[in-house]
Length: 109
Image 1 (cartoon, rainbow, N blue to C red):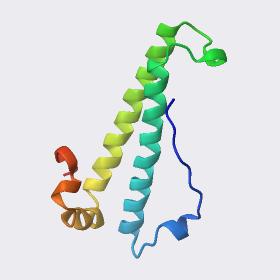
Image 2: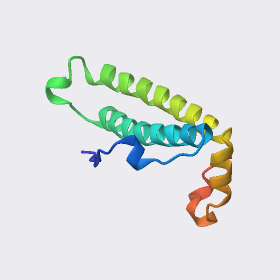
Image 3: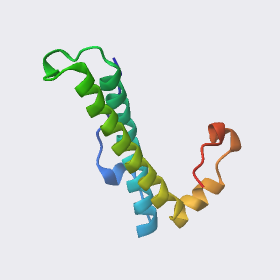
Image 4: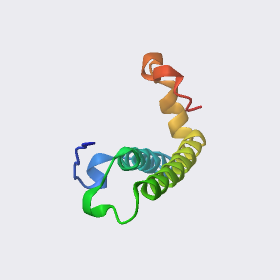
């Protein structure tokens, strides 16, 4: 089963921002973190043979449900990346990334 770790802090303690642009960058980065967790759950649901008492229909119908959710989540990820690409503070931060941290040429450009 997919596992994750949740941390709870006030937004003000996690992110410091000096402009609306920087705040928007943090919002989109946070959104991407949540969407990544959504994807892990959706993939697990699509791959699982059974979900026990959560399975109200047959496995094929459930798998199609999770595949539709995966596509919706990927669309949301694309939207968040597009917003980041248009954000001046993100572009400045991205210019400081080490090439090795842009693993496999992860296209955020």
